[in-house]
Image (cartoon, rainbow, N blue to C red; front, side):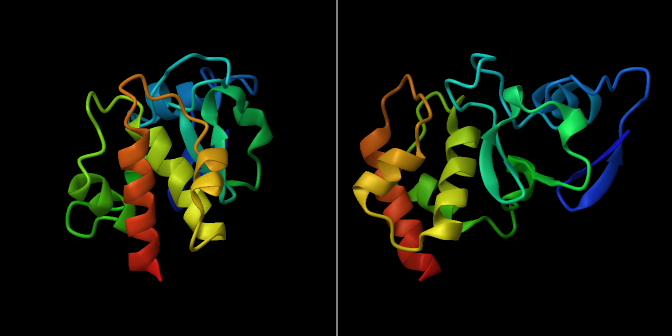
Length: 153
């Protein structure tokens, strides 16, 4: 089996790639992309959020067998150390993370929001970012999303 991740086809070992395997575990265990985090396993917390065809989805609820012809983007492809995404720069400027565990999922949800809504209202941010942050950094992440939106124009 093969899935398209971060701009490239990625083969998965046939003996381990059961079509029912959640994308989360294929990314972490089979492809070594550990930026996507396990949180709850029931699509309720958002820690495992990735993009599938540009939409933010909980990877724990997406079976790899459903990904034929679809494109997956993980936090590893959002930006780089040399060229961080505007959200990543805003995250640092606004000191959003505390423990940081949930942040990759929140960043991916925020990136999907900004891809479809360039100037989101607080209500739109709250609706799009349903991720759970136990540290409660929601006011800072809203400010960071607004900053990134301004940078993106």
